[in-house]
Amino acid sequence: MGDLYPLLMQPAFDPRPWGTFDLSPLYPHHRFEQKIGEAWFTGDHCKVANGPLAGQTLSQISRKYQRELVGDAARDASRFPLLLKFLFPQEKLSVQVHPDDVQALNVGQPWGKTECWYVAHAQPGAQIALGLKSGATLAEFEQSIYENRAEELLNWLNVYAGDMIYVAGGTVHTLGPGSIIVETQQQSDTTYRLYDYGRPRQLHLRDGLAAVKEKVSSGRVVRPAPVQIRGTANRRAPLVAAPYFVVEMFELKDLLELSTRDESGRSSVQVLLGIEGCGLVKTGGGEPVTLAKGDAVVIPGASEKFAVRPQWTLEFLRASVPGATLPEPETRM
Image (cartoon, rainbow, N blue to C red; front, side):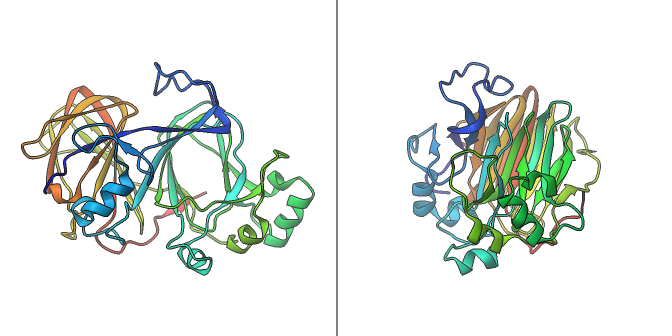
């Protein structure tokens, strides 16, 4: 595996007008002078916090190590394939859409932006909007934007802690206030803002409306119940398996050994994101790395095997690129 090791990522806090000053559910000791909407972990500009590669960006490391870092399953050997971040909406986000792969190629982008949202925390009444209401047409939606009533044509859903929402490229969507979301997506920041409640920000109606699909496979993911891992007190919960990413939840009380290869035999970089508790992550003979609530650790694809040892208990998400071609997940609205 050369010089690579588990990379503790430094969160990049991104101010947004719909964010919050208080990130205490995850970062009780941080104080901010601007409203923070997002905490990025694996964007191209995100930096490593530990070891010899500390201070280097994920983009620099990806270009240098390529398949050693991203694994066999990633589409592009020189670019990190997944973007993970926390979202902290305290006001409604703009109504937006991301292109799918075909639409992205038409405008000169390498790929689109399909994503999923894991609801880590949700206050009573927290909502998201996903797609258009049944029967609403794209022409009606466009007219509602000009009439400043686009919210009326959106399909609003109540969300609860533990939900997993699949957001296929081409889906009109937004987040309401009152939740903390873990977003896993293709490594792209192509966003078309369609409606922004009168905020003085640019809209992208021509490209955005061209990217909207009236029929999409987005929705609340239908998934199996968590299962106990044989021989341990640990539990694993599959959250979503989709063409671009696989996301699982682990609840650990005992040591757990994992692989960077899936059933296809192909390897993928692994991103571990702490939700509750604390533990240690270790590969081979290297130094262990602490994974605590609000931390992200990147396991290079060439690591083959790695171990996670909870300190008391640990709850974390694991995201990876599937080695085989997967269909879109089963969902319901």
